[in-house]
Structures are given as C-alpha cells and as structure tokens.
Length: 292
Image (cartoon, rainbow, N blue to C red; front, top):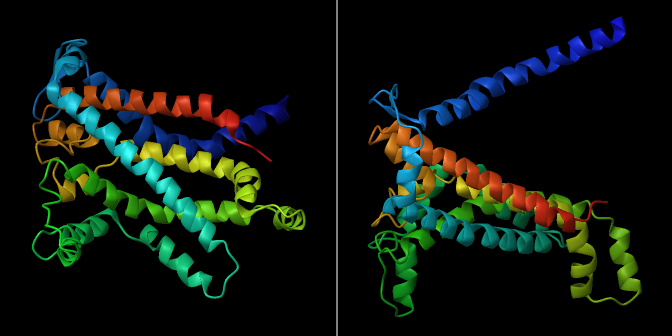
C-alpha cells in the first residue's frame, strides 16, 4: 500500500511541471476566452456587462464573419491537399537511391528552417507588380501582369501558394522518414514477382505510410485553420476581406478594435470547428489507417 502511494506521488511530481505549464499557457487562456465570450469588455479586456449568447447570435448574422468562414475553408482547401500531394511526391523522389540525392533532400526540406516572417517577405517581393519575378516571367511569355495581392480574385490563392511553399519542408521530412521505415524486402519481393511501380505504390507504400499520412493531414488541417503570420504580412486581410481568415478576424477585433468579448466568441467558434474537423478525421479516416 505504501509502495503504491509512493509511486503515485512520484508520478504526480514528474508530470506536475508539464501540468503547470499547460495550465498557465493553455487551460487558463481557454477558460478565460470562453468566459469573455459572454461579456462586453472595456479597452483593457476587463468584463463589464454580461450579455449571454448575444455575441454568438450576432455572429450568425454578421456578414464579415461569414466571409471569414468562407475564406478560412477555402484557404484550408487550397493548402492542405496541395501540401500533402507535393510533399508526398517529393518524398518519393528523394527516397530513391541515386547519387547526390542528399542535395535534393536538403533543398526540399530547406523551407523548414525559415520563419513565417522571412518567407512572407520573400513572397511579397516575388509578387511585387513592378519588380517581382513572377510578373517578369509572365511578361516574358507574353501575358499581362497581375496585382496578385491586391486583386480580390487572386489574393487568397497567392497567399495559399506561399503557405504551401512554407509548409512543404516539414511535411516532406516526416513523409521521407516514414518511407525510409518501410521494410525494403517488401519491394524486393514485389520486383521478383514482376509487380509494377504503380502497383507497389498503391499496395505497399501508401498502406504502410498511411499512419504518417494521417498524421500529416491532421496536423496540416489544424495548422491551416490557425494561419496568421503570412496573412498579416502579405495582405492585412484584404483586399475587400477576401483573405480575412478567422484567426486574423479574431486578431483585428481584439487588438485593433479592442472588442475582446466579440473576438473571444469567434475564438470559441474556431476552437469548435477545429475540434469537429479533428474528431471527424479520427472517426472517418483513422479506420482506414494501416498500423503495423
């Protein structure tokens, strides 16, 4: 009995530092955000008047919030599948046993070492209508130049392309690690049987890589819903709110308009959306994952 109590106390002491950090930086902010969503606040974020669900009811009718929802889901649709497909293709190429392939592995993963701010500035110059390389290439092919970040029809896609480039490095490294953990004898046996490379891809590579793919898709979805830095640097939510995703809308309401209660209500909605999407991922997709 004393031994069990001692082991329990030891376990609590081991996890206490982590629990303390999570309490200060995760649990308390979550509870505080939920609390503020039911109140009107002053310019310092102090609750002043209890209004219940009025913030949430107003969100259902708010045109700007609906536009933010649309921009958010379009951004996720543009970035997540594209990132996963490109990263998977690059990982397949980099997994080949070729001379000098390490150089390409370094190049493919190089975006992992760049901050969002630095990457966004690079793409801002590339999209520049006067000196940007993208318009220079377009003009060289005889097409007309575009105001990529100032045109409502292209701004969100332009930010999505930059985001895909930023995220490829991380996804590529994880998928390459998963590919290198697959038993090579399976491919040798497939070659002996005369199976095609495409058959090996669908019957060996993808099933055995499915846990890694599931992880990448889940993390990429959550990360896409939380995108902020490149939106703030490249477009500031414009033009005409076409790139105002939910996180940027929350930031604008809280730190520009000082409407902390309304921003907290949007944060609660975003949390619920991410929770539901992640839950559906585990319920509908994980059952197809092949764990060894």
